[in-house]
Length: 201
Length: 435
Image (cartoon, rainbow over all chains, first blue to last red; front, top):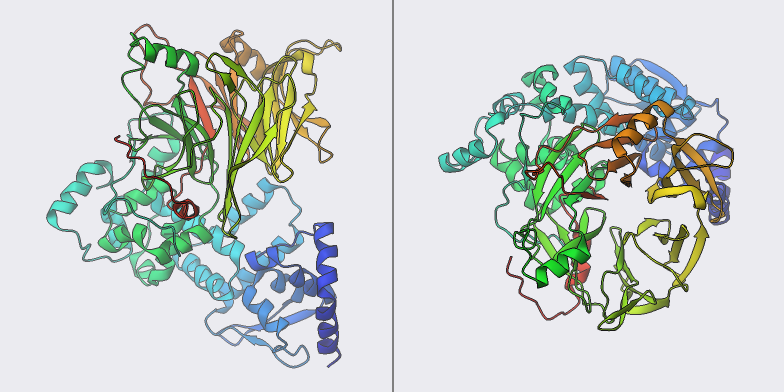
């Protein structure tokens, strides 16, 4: 109960605090929404850094993770905590479409990026590359999880990787990958395409 | 969302490129090393997420991907796809280069029925450079009529200015989708003014400075005029004029935008002219080591203004070098932030032989082009990496080996530039350009 009152009080102070925060140029880590809104930075700072929340995978396995970490990265979790639908004492956040293996990886990603966001660019990129060294199934599951939880920077990372995988592929190969049986072009149009990109057929 | 105009019912790729290039290792090797993708997994991907992958592709790859199927082909015309594209497409710090028409002599040749042929064949090919993959592409600007030269670039739009002396006509072009938008002509007649352009999703600012023609034969740097239009309904159609400081020479003709100001290099002695757009005022900033600079250029990186130049001699007997300074937040002090490694500088200086060089920056990249050659260096500021750029395979070489100078801009190819929709509301007598 106390927590909710405190949050409302803070919300009342927000206009002045927002100005203060922008002057300090506090840089949050994580999703696009968090990047823009000082409200979320404040709410993230508000809870003690070691306050934990419980996430429950589709296999009913429970993961405990720092609230600050998830709030900074996942728009969905941030919204749940923000609007008070999450009660720290009792509930856990059910994530029925994310299995344990994937959830563990997602938590790994968010935790690393929160704790290491001051690292230099190259180190972070190397860590990200190692993080994404998974098989196709793993990558797909991560994409679905990041999409569901709306973790912008993880999504950008995954999409960047997939785009690189597609970039050099031949047209027929891409059709196979996405199971596009009927491309919809007339024979003349297909001929025209082949003429324009002979190396991609 | 207005502004998504499509000037052609079907758009074939504006790019041309070959795979015979040996220097572009990344493009050729991706054929062999990209991992096998299991279709049982990826065919399950919902359409929306596939669209998002496509929105992530750089424009040349996007145009190739359009050949996969009709649905993908049509995405370029889909407003919902373009909105997604504008939201998620990553910033790409590419460059575009043009064969430099040495403007003044070009005009004279034109008047005298130029013998060399540069006046007659109106070649508006641009050479697009991707510093991430070290790849070159060619883009044609067939939409831009003759008598115009490229002047500036911002947010996927390229600004072309009329060559003829007098009131200047400015065109904003997006060659990827083939759009061309015209600005109202500038009121004051000018010869070769410096042009500054900055475009955001909701506003366009253009400033035209210097080379006022006070009589048909007399040119002086007296004033600047600014154009502004934004989505909030505010506009100034060249109504904002400002006086330039006395005795300035805006020789480079280029203006760089950083945090609300346009900056331009001023010669003899070197200093930096700055124009604050909101307060409509010009002021001068002293250049660092101004008596010892050679070929200075201005660049923008992460919102900060950088100055790059060769340092010729120094009171401290430091060897010649190529340095980069950053303008500090106070707006008057410079701090040296980068220096070319001495070994590389020796190589560079030998190739350059005192002919000078031009620099252009975009994001974390700086391209240094040695005049009179096809050699250029790429510097990655964030990774502190210097690399020689493979020569552009599309440039024509004259039979006696002389190479046209390259004139470069920071350019990010974009599939949509809806902000030009703002200009359509200005009722202008439509000038029919026959390309």
